[in-house]
Length: 204
Image (tube, rainbow, N blue to C red):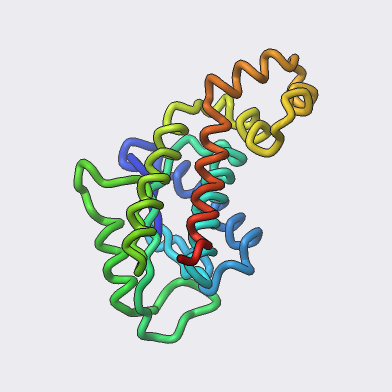
């Protein structure tokens, strides 16, 4: 589940339009990872069901990059829950399903605690919950000061480690890209994302 941070301070029509486009794109690109498609339940909230935990973690990371690609003027709060769904999973829309997992996820999403994390994880493996939660906090800290005018450049730097390749794409020189890569802490973000993926699939 997810929602838009600070939506009450934003233009409601803008939020709805951009969130609708975002959700539609996620469902199209990552359909193989989703059992029940992301569905907007309220103006600024959505929910869906992933195939497994690995798919859910991957989806969180990819949705962060997609928010850059679509230059969203807001950040989102996510809840990833491993839990029971007692009714049949709806493959067309994430409506009409019941279960303890969905109820708990809704409670976490609706929490108004000051210290609520942007990424809330509730998994069966306590060790992974702790470690992955810490890593997602690092990702959040690294990206929270990124500005919309830099999103396109940031995406290129995340995709390509070669500074000259990025420089050619953005009509800059290699030294400029090297400086921006360090200022924006791109390698720290990329490496943290890779550790998240490795930890998710690791079997003790």
